[in-house]
Amino acid sequence: MARILLVEDNEMNRDMLSRRLKKRGYDVDIAIDGQQGVDMAASGPDLILLDMSLPVLDGWDAAKALKGNQATKHIPIIALTAHAMAGDREKALEVGCDDYDTKPVELARLLDKITHWLEA
Image (cartoon, rainbow, N blue to C red; front, top):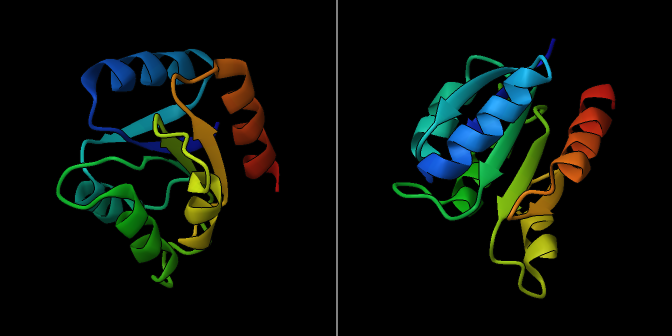
């Protein structure tokens, strides 16, 4: 099964999402800030779920770094954000995210997006 890197600083969100993904057979690695996410992406996950409001290095800059790196630019990134403001989706795509989803996470919708990008 696919390996997903979950980059999320909120412990409750991290726990809930990682348990649900593992229950569906995914291997889940966890990073708690943007810099750790960028560093861990070098190990080659199949997909990255990236919170956009992160400490150390925010999700916007982490996405730019990941897509600017030859070793990680091919990894699909789904941006996750509670800040569903007008223009956020476009901004996330502009910095390199491949898709965008809002919090609170609607699991069925997110799983559809994960499946889409893993099969792309």
